[in-house]
Amino acid sequence: MSDFIGVFEPDLSGNEKLYLTQCIDSGWIGSNGPFVQKLETEFSQYCNQKYGSCVTNGSAALDVAIKAMKDVFDWEDNDEVIIPSFNIISGAQSCIYNNLKPVFVDSEDKTWNIDTSKIEEVITSRTKAIMIVHIYGLPSDVDEILRIAKKYDLKIIEDTAQAHGQEYKGKKCGSFGDVSTFSFYTNKHIACGEGGIVLTSNEKIKEKIDYYKNLCFSSDKFVHQEIGWNLRMSNLQAAVAYAQFEKLDKTIEKKQYIGNIYQKLLKDIPASLSLKNTSYAQNHYWVFGVLIDEKNNLTAKNAIEFLKKENIETRPFFYPMHKQPIFEKLGILDDIKRPVSEMLYEKGFYIPTGLNLTDEKLEYISNKIIKLFS
Ligand SMILES: *Cc1c(COP(=O)(O)O)cnc(C)c1O
Image (cartoon, rainbow, N blue to C red):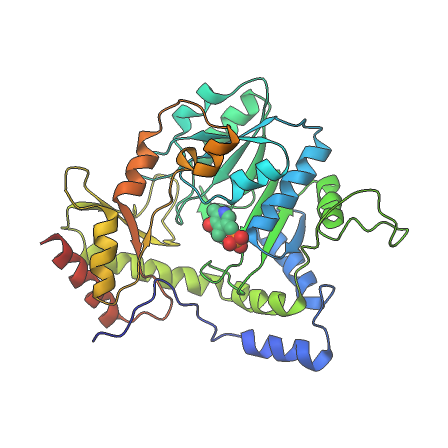
């Protein structure tokens, strides 16, 4: 059994094909098609927000969400947004595009989410918002972040790109942000190749998002007061995303099934695994992480090489934001130590959780990981 095992594979066996056919038969392929509207209405309801606005991807969702917030809340250039350092670049990049400064906070070594005890020490008079990012399928400690935000009068941006359908203390992730953003990239729990959505319950923000994502068209068509983007999602993308949304529960169930098997088979290796749960949530295993014990000589790079030779595709953990060459070049970094996110990069990698993985393959992967450590 040496077939190549990819780190992720989507399951498109629901209504994806049917809905795509409907788009083509009806001629509704553009961004004002019915699946875009259905997705905006139903997904925002599902997440307890009033409005949804579909966009081309999860990074664009953050670009336009932050732009809208900056307008509506009168933020100034160089105001600051607090972000976990252990994260994809999208959130920090969106701040920079909007002339805001991302300020990075280290992670906890067990949940890999932002270390909430380190947030207050980076708050300044310029801080305007905290970005919650739920990492790898396990929610951040939302209540603690909301408590700090309230105390310092800060807004919340919730990057929910890895937590569709996830809940914190029984409330949907994506319901906590003044804006909450999602990605529908191929490996996300709702996938349509490329796509995303911004949710908000603030009407002004919703209007701004629709304006900026649509070239800042005004009632006087082709007369523009401002510069925006074209970030409109097509009805074709929304058709696939909507079919995926319909079976989100099944996707989560399969991910948890995979996660539970790995927990069982890998329990004795000298590494910590994605947590099964915290006091406030069950892990949805957007990905399944393996974090090699610090005292073990192996690095994540060694593990990735080894498993590649066994035809198993894996991925390294995030490279910390506070070490990014581009941010150094831009002169936005400080001297604060963030050792946990550096360790996570050094020692962490994630293993296949494709939706079509069989028990046999999960066992094969687990055996090779056990071999790696022997
Ligand atoms: C995937 C992801 C994004 C970016 O989404 P794209 O659709 O790939 O642009 C942003 N934030 C997080 C946390 C992500 O996981």
